[in-house]
Image (cartoon, rainbow, N blue to C red; front, side, top):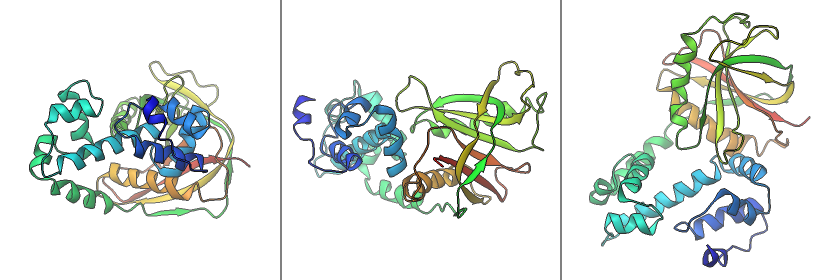
Length: 290
């Protein structure tokens, strides 16, 4: 890391400086704390701002760059042995490298080495998903409320597991004290003590005096001002549509809105008749100061 630190880019923008540092040192062991130090920010604010600017968490970006570097080396006329490449990129074993590569590119590194063009096809397929977002012209102030539901801790590599929370919640409905005529919320906030991770709660609103349901998590969402986005959902697979919205909201819309992002949970608001696989809509509530 000492050698890598000597290659820190001389860029004024702290987030661009951190991103360029990752690109220059992709094969080096990098941590969230080290990248925050390059940016001159606390780890919490660095992670939030980096994700808001680029639509991807810092450590997910490190992994993405490392896997892009791996793909580039495997596409060479004389690609390295897989075990050699795994160790060069900081993996403790070829098995761990293979799992990470397949998660990133959809194929094993051995198969990719034989046919590198299939990654280009996968990338074109991902780019075809449209977010279909519209944004309220002004932020909206919403009152606080209480929710209860099923939660888990995720990062950018495991967020595809979030949909599995919803069936666990649905089988418990209705809850005692449930309100809101069937609306539900996905509530997301940084996971305390777990850098680069977030907690996601699949939940329904309940009254303030409702008993805490056994085995479920209760969370109070404070009164907050939000940027509100409406996403039109079609009958195609839901997760790619939601991921397209995440990328557009955090990578483009929110950072360029002119409003300062606030600490606090952001929410996905689902109408009472929402069903995956059917045309519907979702609202995204992003907290801002004001």
